[in-house]
Length: 243
Ligand code: GLP
Image (cartoon, rainbow, N blue to C red):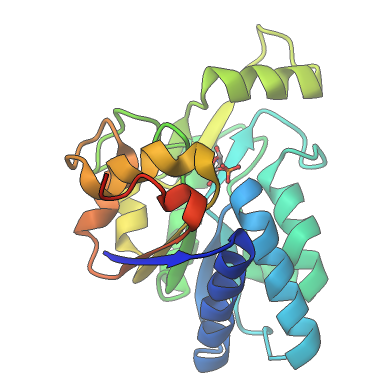
């Protein structure tokens, strides 16, 4: 695991954006995985800025999201598809065929997971997946206790996130609401992984991910067994490393 520490969150965004842009330029058919949340907003903004400055060709690039909220409308502002479209995909003008997402609503979510995985394989497999880190060590919606051998499937979110989304979308307690996500084995199949970590709220979990035992109770510790994983963290998130 390669660990790079930056003075500010903006430098993390810029470095991550540069990695993605360099991949786009060097491999015009690259398959690139994205994550949503506070960590990646700035990263996406930087990619858009670099695109507007440099106008590199993205017509053959496939973008996809690693996870989604299941049981909400695609228009909901907290749906990953909505966030990725608003922050990056529509800004770059990516065509629909080159933007692959797990569904927010589906009669057959497991079938949709298989199709998602199949599509990524048909495009040649994932070149780079940019990950955020949950405060409990989750990756996507792979919560603590998820087997490292897990594949794309319907999953759960943290109770805090679930109650926030229920409140924001007016989803009643009886109606299904969950997560749908790439599995940890799918993550490990990606050729390159980048984990972005920013802010002091992530300091304790980042220490566990890098220095604690490799365990399914902290899903992100599986990244230490990947041959090409880079952690890009800011000073605040790194403050407990080595202590
Ligand atoms: C969420 C998302 C993940 C994201 C992670 C970190 O649950 N499902 O895709 O990477 O948590 O989010 P944040 O960057 O807001 O801390």
